[in-house]
Image 1 (cartoon, helix red, strand yellow):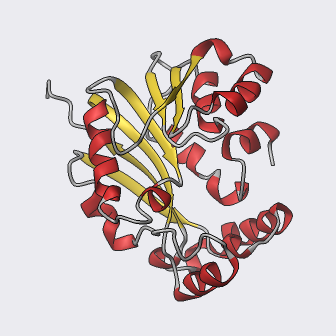
Image 2 (cartoon, helix red, strand yellow):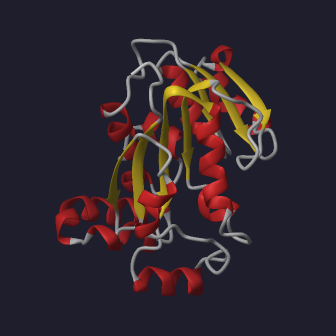
Length: 230
């Protein structure tokens, strides 16, 4: 796996990295210098990806991710394009500000104690986007009963995480003019090490069309806000 892509995605790279070409195919990331926001950034991998594309980025998390993320960004000489802020995704202090907002695997944690926070987060993102702005998202899905069983048994936060259900996807993004999404991955979720996840992820790529869309465990999407001029 490409080292740069690993820096963008961090874990379960084979399956989650499918977000990068999907987002790129459905978003103009390079012809204009976009104003971007990454939510739940942790180590700032997606901020790095956006900055390499020539965009200006705010790299954010509930606590400022600067201490860890800035090391990665400096290493790749992208630090001059990236700012760091502490931002609560359920209360974003911007309105009609960003061309692009991106997140990966945050909704389940945010809504672990209050399911309504999924919708509040998406509504805050909608508010913070400019007209015609786009949300790029990748999120854990509830997937199959086998996934639910093994998560509860072997993942320490498996009982707390509020996994997104496939049937929740369309209602969650109802405010957006257009939503494109696809689901990926099945076996990769069962890997206990990154090597195992890489091997299982490659098998997932080969058997993808044998697995029902609702049974896959990752959703990748692009949600577009309406352009008020049209």
